[in-house]
Length: 208
Length: 208
DNA sequence: GTTTAAATTAAACGATTGTTTAATATTGTG
DNA sequence: CACAATATTAAACAATCGTTTAATTTAAAC
Image (cartoon, rainbow over all chains, first blue to last red):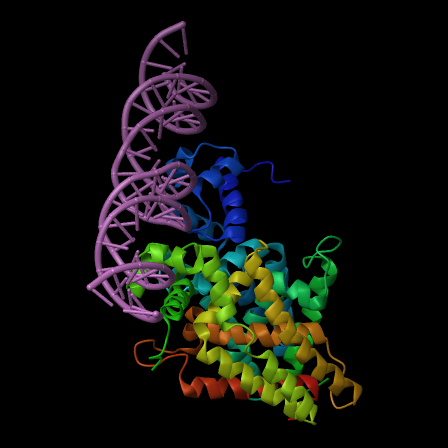
């Protein structure tokens, strides 16, 4: 798997892993270089600086969902069905790139505004705009009842973050034994999708 | 306000502020000492080390909600009313100590197990056990429908975290101008309470 | 094979990290 | 005041931080 990666991409993959685990300031370029099997100087050589490596990582993984959401907004007629498919896409993406999303959500817990945080927020804001569209459309068509649109989106993001990203707590709440099973098993993914779909249907329509 | 604080507590308050903003490894003991107006050596003098200062901070703020939740579980008969009062208490606490909760949630995004993370998870797990009780009781009494209890708790924690802790994104989603108003205004607190109560009522009973 | 460019290396840079030391200042007690 | 305990200080500690340098190896082009 991943045979044809450039050295640059290999560094980014290792950076994602380490930063997801220890945070940005908790990850030293030496630890990164050691794990990637390269010389420390290569990081400055390829990216310029540690900061710019981080920016490159965000670029590397960014813009994943927006295209999918836009397509769904154009091609799927029924708002409820559209919501369901957005949930599927969102959950799939987070489960397959949970390390990167851990980095995103950790960054969002910072109050400092950096080049990176502006990029990251921009990405997530554009996604949330697509969700807003379907919520507003469903309400206008009297299919959804009147809900707090902004908080509904925050609820979606927050719930998924809690279940799939902040796994340290949720695995304990759910009762997963990290030795034998993982939060990122297919069964938990499906359970997450079902939970979110039921939740949203009750929240938006009240129909069981 | 807070006139009668010991020097130790003053240091903890400053530590909370800085760690909430820059993270644990992003906060140097020198920056901390400078902001607290003390000598760097005082941190080792009072706490032993930077790590132990962090542990002391967790101790300092811990165990806030559990007592309240236990009282509610004993004294409030109606499960739905109990959920509502738990939401009130939970939202109040997070809004009044959002810096500390930012630290908690950031810590939970780590995959590394430290002395601290075990403490923190223990605190949150005990709280979630109290919520589990009322959910199970309501279901048993046929007042609530059958729901995914663990994911429901994750949803509560995650939503509140997203709205009130991860304010960098949510203020942008909600459209708050940080110059003129704050996420932590009373109006947003009430809006959060109302949203969560409506959400939970629809989720648990389906009654509007 | 020679020349030129790109990739990689070990070593050193100064700055900053958390912590300790030893001297000094402050406070409380008799 | 004198004495002891506590609090506070500036300075130094070794370790690690991100980054740069200058030399060397590898790869590509002709």
